[in-house]
Structure formats: C-alpha cells, structure tokens
Image 1 (cartoon, rainbow, N blue to C red):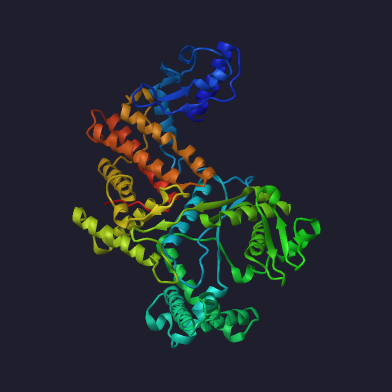
Image 2 (cartoon, rainbow, N blue to C red):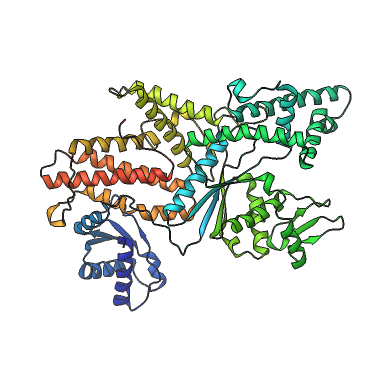
Length: 594
C-alpha cells in the first residue's frame, strides 16, 4: 500500500476522532522544498465539513497522527498545509519491498479486464513515412505499452489506406513515366520509389492545369479537366470494377510499399499485432446503416442519401451513405470498429491515434456507434495530437517537401556520432559498438523529444537540440543510466542482501530518491488514464535529476560503512531499473555504456 493510501485512512480516522465528522477524500501534495516534511495534507478542503481555523485543524490532525500512526514522526503547519515528516524506517522498508522487483510499477493483465485495441500509423500506400507519421507511431506504440503496464491486455493495429485516388495517382505516374523501374533496379526502398511517382503526378498535373488556363479555361475547370487527373479517376473506377491489369499493378506497387514500411517500422522500433486494409474494409458498415435505418438511428433524404441527425447533441447532420448507395469514410469506420470487436471478442475499447484535424470526425463516429447500441462505444478514445513542424516550416507530401522518416533516423544517428566524437568518451569501442550506440542515442533523442510533449501540443522539432547531453533530453537520461551501470560494475556486489532500518541511516538525498521511486506505479496509471507518454517522460527526468543530486552529494562506493555502500548501490540499481522500465514504455533503449 502506498504512503498516500496509508495516510488517507489515518487522516479520516483523525478527523472523525477530533471532530466527529467524516471526510470523503483527503487531498495530498508534495511538500514544498522550503518546508520540512515528506508529504503534505491540504487542510482547506476540510473547511467544507467543519468550520474553523485551518492552522488549528492542521495541528489537531498532526498531533493525532504523531500519537497514533507509526509512520509519522513529526509535523508542521504552514497556513492551511499540514506537512508530515515520515519515519526513515518506512522508506527503508518500502525500498526493501521493491528493490528486487524487475518490473516494479508494472501490473499484470487481469483476465476480468477487457482488452484495448490501439490503432496507429495507418499510412497511405502512395508515399513513404515522414516526420508526422513518426509522432503518430511513437505516440500509439508508447500508449499501447503504457496501457499494458497498467494491467490491460492490448492489441496494436493499423488500417492501411491502400486504395483510392491518391494510390491511383502514383500508379498512373509510374505507368507513364516509370519505364518499368523497380526497387531492385533503382536500389530505392519501395515506398520511396512509389512516393517519387506521387510527386511526379503532381508536377505533371500542375503543368496540365497551367496549359489549360493558358488556353482560356478558368482555374477550377482546369483542375477538374486536366487529362492526367481524369485518367487517374478512370483508373480508380477500373480498380473498383476489378480490372485484371489495374489490380495486378496495384498489388505490385503496394507490395513494394509494404516492404519499405516494414523496414521503417523495424528501424523505428514499433510493431503491430494485426493489420487491416482499407481495400478490405471500405464496404463494411453498409449493413449497419441498413439496420440503423430500421431502428431510426439514420434517416433517408429525398435523393436517397442516408444521414444521422446529431443536432440534439450539438453537432450537425452527418451523411453515412451517398445517394448512389456508395459508402463514405464514416461508414467504413463504423463497420471497421464493429468488425474489430467481432475479430477480437475480448476487446472492450479502442484508442485511435490520429491528428487533431480529425477531432470532429471521431466525435461523430463514437456517437453514431453509441446510438447503434454498442456499449463499448463509451470506451472509444481519440488520441488527438498536434502536428510536427520544422524550423523550415510545414511539410507537403505531394510537393516532396516532407522530412522522410528513414532519412531522419539516419540523421539522428549521424548527429549523435558527431556529438559523441566531440565528447571523446568512446575509447575501446569497436566500430560496430559505436554504430549501435549512435543509433541508440539518436533514436532515444528523437523519441524522447517528441514524447515528452503533451500529445495535444504542436511540436517544433529541432534534431540538434534533441541530442543535447544536458537538460530534459533522451541522451541526458541515457547517460545517467550508463553512469549507474558503471557504478554497479565497479561495486561488483552480487549477493542478495536486505538491510533493515536498524542497519541503515537514511540520508535526505536517499529519502528524496525513494520518494521519487514510490511515485512510479501511480504515474503509470495516470499516464494510462490520460493516454499521455509525456507523464512517463517527465517523471523519468525528475527521477534522473533526483539521482544526480544524490550522486553529487552522497558518496556511494566511498561511503563510511559496508552497509552504506550496499544500500546505496542497491538504491542506484533500482533507479537504473526504473529508468529502463520507464524508457521501455516510450520505446527507448538504454545503453550499458556511453
């Protein structure tokens, strides 16, 4: 049981004993650094239950706790804040209870809990993954890992957007300008090759628009009538009709892209449990529209189109079937969500990792699924995130101005190499060990820089700033982990020793470090509830700051007694293990040496 849970029970008992009144909740906060104490009880909310002077109320409760609670050794009251000093023995006993737990803070999945499906990445097959996809992948993967650590069974999935006019644009451009080239013949990754033809289509399209305008067409008409666009639209119709040659080309080019994606995912360190393809799901949902029409969830307009009226919920009317009977994206998403629960009956909720420009879409989707009578609709969550910008500005795929994901991963490793070589701390490393370390540092910098920011906020990404070895960065935390590993190697303490409170005198820096460790299980639960890797990232930074303060002020291997050395080495090891576990939730590796 956590200190807060122990104290909450006793504070309620104290209040009952002193005032013969019941407190529903007790509010705690960390004790401010300028005051003595380990944890603070906020007295002000108690004034809603009993009237009185908050200082006097705080003193009455403090005296009760000192007299009746073994863990509390003293207190002070500042205005409406009761600062409690906790016995050193409590912290030592708590530490002993966690020091040998390899996955301290993690909760095993319970059979009673419904599983959660987390969707992320979900790219189009007309271009390679870029910086925006990286934030999506890192967020989705990390939230899935955090949910797992919080005690949920998790399925990671994506829906690959493998059909539509964008795909046909790449196909048509390759058909006209590709001269039969392949990833093998060009040495390019398949997704990059196909992406080049998406850019090529846009270039040719603009030329044709300009030519039509020069002939006297207005711009809107020129955009609609450009021959290359008309041809792409015809190709889409041929695909939908099952044209043998078009489908064969589509399968070939998508196959190139999938191989490219697999390589990028591997380099980025993300994975999936199952995949959905739009080509297989775009017709889903129609049967539920038909059922919803019968039950009154949807209504039909005079032109035959089918809509859902959400005006009573403060939204508008939303089309779910066109007048010609074809589905829209909303129809597909309704069907796909329901299909997923059919495929995985233990799923009781889903997380959709999609940019914040789609917030309205998901509001509508979740509401429609709820209206259709699916009780798991209440457990649908849109993990909405802000865009990633660069100092140079926004990115545009069709103009070829995106930051390619593969190129960025290489650039991060190269930047890590430059900085590491300048620091000159890699004597004795083989070339392969250096290359592995550069990748670990580079990827760690990239992931941490993106994940430490609240998902809803936009990010201005600066690669060089992210690889600073000082401050709130991935490499700074990785360096601290490596430093602890060096201490552990020098200490060479292998036997399992547990020291009692009688054998250890707790330094204030040790106390602060144990208090920080104690927060980790709650931080995991908060991060899971809020779908926020930023909570894990910033907790880890705080833990590292606490360790570095301990390291600079307290001698570890040069301590006065063997018991002190053993205890401080064990404490260092537990901190390192917690850093490693926390970073695993962000998908970040930690090096044994740096």
